[in-house]
Amino acid sequence: MDDTWFYLPSEKEERLVTVLTKEDEEWVNFSHPAYNGNYPVKGAGTFYSGGSGMCSTAEDYAKFLQMYLNEGEYIGTRILSRTTVKSIMLNQMVDLWEGRDSHYGLAFGVLNERGEAKGGNGSAGTFNWGVILILSILPMLKSSLSVF
Image: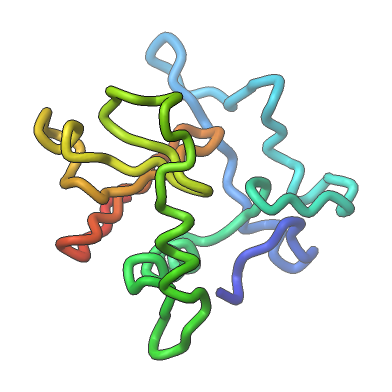
């Protein structure tokens, strides 16, 4: 992943897209108190969160997800151990989310058998990562298919 940043280098700033939302049948700039669309360009450049705030291309993000689908390996290079990937996907909420269609691991929501039986969200083991813009990624571990 060579095109992923917390803060964009000045030569890449023009590539940052404006996030839009539809209001009354018209597309307008997305606005939310927890979201500043210019942070990769105008931010202080000092906050590097492990769980949010990165700016990336679809290609780099696909590489990131493919590494998880390959149980921590990407194009023959081991990045995370299989044990680490399994721990990341393991139910960390145990009893708190009992009876739900999914559980939450260290990084992803993971669909369980109950969720699979309801249909429409993939097979058990499908994982998602909801971000501020409500993007969910559903890589299906059994079928090695990624849906963005």
